[in-house]
Length: 284
Ligand SMILES: [Zn+2]
Image 1: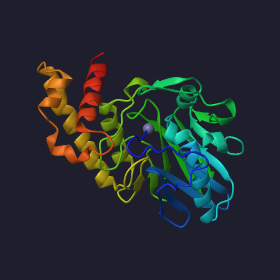
Image 2 (image 1 turned 90 degrees about the horizontal axis):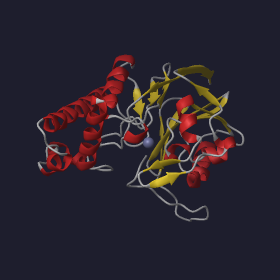
Image 3 (image 1 turned 180 degrees about the horizontal axis):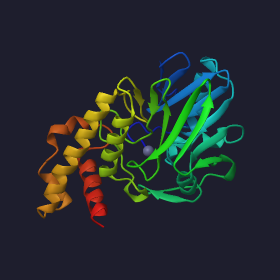
């Protein structure tokens, strides 16, 4: 979920979205289109793509994959159910196999309410067809790809890990160098983000390249520091709540002022709200 650069690109728009391609190793690239970051593996087995952007931007994504030597997309992973990660399912769903968790299939199968808007269920052909409970592994382009679930941004954030390449895509679990959106109504929780980040830091070798749905590429050290920020800010706000303050009072005190520059896509006040909601849920 990404709001600041949320573009509306009609199919006939002449406006080309900002696109960036970073080669991560011999066969894996990060492709960024309009602020949404994908990982793509291209090789003898074909094309394996992480995340599926907005439907309107699909042709740009296909063009980049094409320019990197990829043909048809064989597999697409949806890291979670938000529309900027599943939009191209409406195109890829005809010929590609879409992979995600069972929980995400459930979330995508019905109309849902998100931030004042009704998000329509995806049609049957665009839904994930390879679904898993906890983890899924496959061999593709000469290496094992491991997919497993952590939570925090939503209740079911699929992590896509290429252990032999030391590359991982962590969906929207966090946003690089900024406060992230937390989908509280669909199982997101700030404390769970911290716990998931901590777990990742234990699993990932230090030289792993960490790609996320929005924001810069992280090292494991960057990820560890981000996790510390999450826990530190959570504890500051939690203590204020425990002292009897309301979210509005906490915001007025500007308790997260030292992280003001992190409020790029979502502000300090948004982050305080997510923490307040999380604390409330964690008490239940
Ligand atoms: Zn999201």
